[in-house]
Length: 56
Image 1: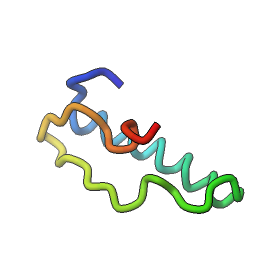
Image 2 (image 1 turned 30 degrees about the vertical axis):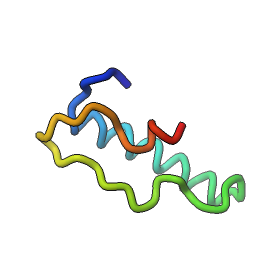
Image 3 (image 1 turned 135 degrees about the vertical axis):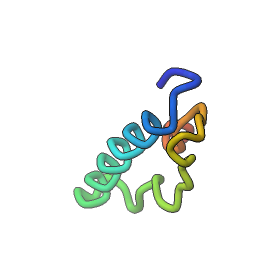
Image 4 (image 1 turned 180 degrees about the horizontal axis):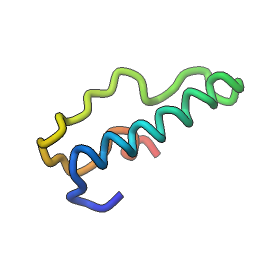
């Protein structure tokens, strides 16, 4: 993701990453998703990076 991406882009990125991680848990590849209990910036806040991107 580009530096300076908007909060709505972060939300979309998080949703995709989080659903992928949930599928990995269901498939037994991961014990738990690293995308649990993540506080995302509010839409319109203009945050720079998505939370899960920092984990990858």
